[in-house]
Image (cartoon, rainbow, N blue to C red; front, side):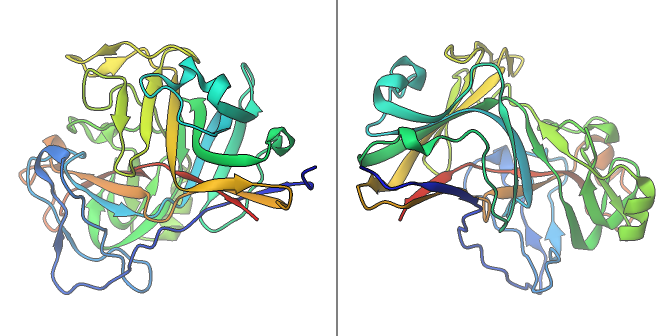
Length: 318
């Protein structure tokens, strides 16, 4: 008989070194591929000086940071004793996985903040049996929300004004493609916190994902985990690659544990953690109204978004 298990959700750290640089850090990666540099975070939390190549899109101008806050709507969370079908995990996930959250129509809204514990309502750990779990599956609505404010050591252009303090605009939609209008930006920049409060529009921006870089509805993330786009809770989305869109309504994450989760009769606690430290990114644009020829003097570029760069959940048994 297993002992009673309690769940605590923690933002688990992946270490991201903070460092101060004398010279500006160029964060442009042409084409958006390859290794993305870390954001140069100074000791006081300010982002150090950045350098952006001209006429490059937000996807090419990005640096890795922490995710400060994240909100999502979860339908399913399952722990698996072997890997489900990697072409579409829903094919056999009920054979391979134990679902500790399993909702068809009513998702559970969960808000994560870096370093703060959070309990997911409706999680039922009593369903877990003794054994070794090697993978996890998570099904959520195709709409993630982010809220953060960041101080920079240089001014950037936001949706309507420029400044050193940039923040997410409530209900703004993320745009990953070239900037054609400042309204494409999901960030605003001002001189200080008082100006942000006076604007009254600091809030949750959101990201819906309809295209993940190819005609396939699956992408291998930098963490090694796999992201799938689904039209319903079991069907892979149909990708319109030429128009970079799809009919995706859900996202499914398949996660590979670096160390198996072992549950036995002595297990008294399981911590569920969503990795946030080092799993975010800051994006910038130098196209259209954000190009050198269109920007005011002294403005390095526009800030497009602060959001996740990857995903991972960790499960630790005690």
